[in-house]
Amino acid sequence: MSRIRTSSGELLIELQRSGGAPLHQQLESGIRDRIREGRLRPGAVMPSTRSFAEDLGLSRGVVVEAYQQLVAEGYLVSRAGGYTEVAEVAAIESPGVTMLTGVESRIDFRYSRPDVSQFPRAAWLRSIRRVLNETPYRSLAYLDGRGTIELRTALADYLNRVRGTAARPEHMVICNGFAQGSRLLLQVLAAQGYRCIAVEDPSDNDLRRVAAAAGLTTVGVPVLEGGVDVEALERSEADVVLVTAAHQFPTGVVTSAETRAALVAWAARRGGLVIEDDYDAEFRYDREPIGAMQGLMPDRVAYAGTASKTLAPGLRLGWMILPPRLVEPMAQAKLMDDRGSPVLDQLAFADFVARGEFDRHLRRMRPRYRLLRDTLVERLAARLPELVPTGVSAGLHVMALLPDGLTESAVQAAALERGLGVYGLAPYWVTPPGPAGLVFGYGGLTVNTVIEGVDLLAEAVAVARE
Ligand SMILES: Cc1ncc(COP(=O)(O)O)c(C=O)c1O
Picture 1: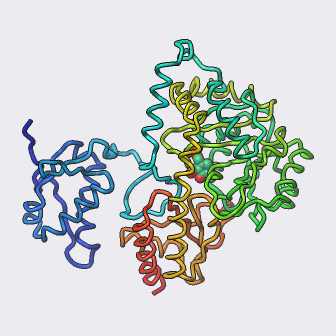
Picture 2: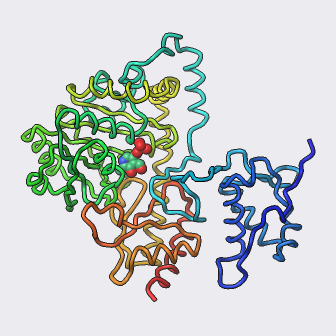
Picture 3: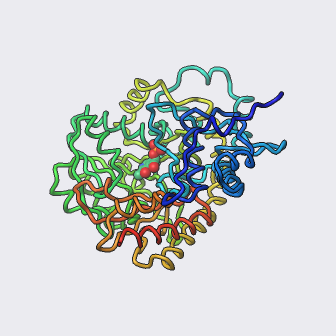
């Protein structure tokens, strides 16, 4: 099949020759934008580097560098015939749709990105094959609102062994990630008469919007050295509290044994509920594993887990272990919402977990993430010693407060000019303004991009200070 090359004229990329970002970066972002907007379609053949360089009055090396970067990001592919084309999988952004996972920066410390390039395709494929060969037809009918028994059983075994939970498959509900599980749970709780949810201050801001939509009021409780301030919780109106006990988001604080005990005791006294968001506990680097709170008092803790950090957020697989009284209402809410999560995905995941592939995958990923964490911490110490990272012992992110005289917005703007995405703490404070700081997600980066990212940040901080 003959291929028609896109001409450089069709791309209409304007470059700012003086005072702008480096030319290869301008070219990259011009091409990236055209792909994301759908103006350059998957399969379109890019102009040759020579003709593109000539038309734009650039050296060929600049175009080669831009193409190489976009190949690395997955927007372009180099083909054997010596040409480059737009990748089939390139993310196309339809007009008016905001992509949550936008790729504006060349190096991006955006939180919540595991390394999806390490997704265990071969093992997952084996599980899918097995499931398709062996699953009886009746399993393809409408689902139990709790999800498939195979997945609930495999996860209960795994969580009881690894996270110290006291899970029984009949008390579990499979959902499309924490996002759906938490939304349904807050709706169920509101319908049962719960009125006010306490959240950690700082914490993920999405949940506050979800709580408001469910008709719950929200109160922020400060995060202290050992976890949330239980005395402040006692004084509040809250009858539910949501905690990220294993590795607080975003501070990284690990909830102490004392605070855990105090939290479940609070829930028992108040007739309330602790929601335990165990989103990244599988990645621990320098400290002893700490069991989930759910195991302490299964009747007062709703435990939520997700495959978003361990495997891939696009799977949309999550699970809850619920106090028995909440199981039926949650199963009903799940059925009302979407009639259940896709059955083949559930069965493949069940097979993957039951065969030990999940453990194997985690064993493979831990040293990779640890290396990234070490690189980030060491580079920050070398280049930006005034930014002291905290919460480094686990997870896929660290946090660092900014020294006096620096604002998040100034650092972010200076970083963005250098093609670097960094993210401030501001959205996470329940009672703003809290101290300024940055949250560094490193899960989706490489050792080289972490190093380069910190170096760019050092430049940005110097400029932001001027
Ligand atoms: C605090 C926290 N909890 C849970 C999740 C996982 O959410 P989901 O399972 O909906 O992908 C995230 C994702 O980034 C998170 O930041």
